Length: 230
Image 1 (cartoon, rainbow, N blue to C red):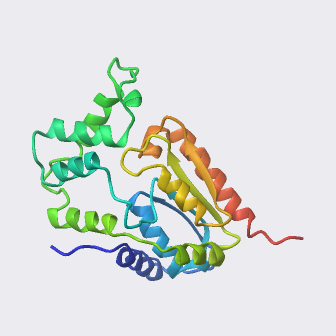
Image 2 (image 1 turned 30 degrees about the vertical axis):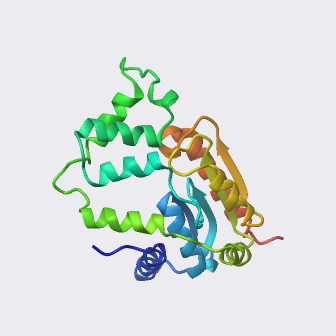
Image 3 (image 1 turned 90 degrees about the vertical axis):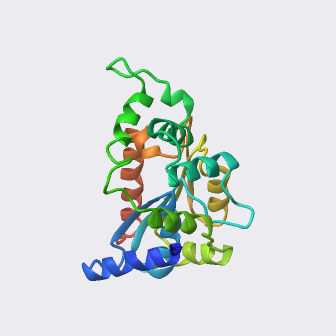
């Protein structure tokens, strides 16, 4: 099994964009979530002039002391190793991705959001076409060893300007500490920090309407930044 690197994954994205000829200046609005946010940091270094807006969602820039909590590590290892019954594994995953207050909310069908999410995740958990263990291991390594230095982040802010840069997090994220978003915001001059109250790691799932409205605003501000002044 070979570990992945976020730099290599970003190169893959660039190659795909080049292949489909999506290479125009200031033509991209990027929303990078979790590992996607780490990958996006490297993509910004590769193609800064193609980007109109970049949103780093529930993610981190990485440092020596920035490692997942023991609880998060144990949960992820159980899932990777497929240890224990399906329902127990998914329950542990849900508790890592969503606040308990959200999971316990009642839904219109008389169940809870936890029940609905269990059914949703069952559509892709424990299926023959599931991601092979080598792929899971590769992504785990890419996340664990990701690091975008202070100088690289400063370069991103300078080379993307005047593109819109947003850093977005839930204030109850158990997988990636919200403090990592404050750190990222502090190292990206001119960026905006947006915190979702009572929200966990998967913002687009937990608060889809609020998240979609935010996406529309960020895209609009990215477009406005490059409008020709009359």
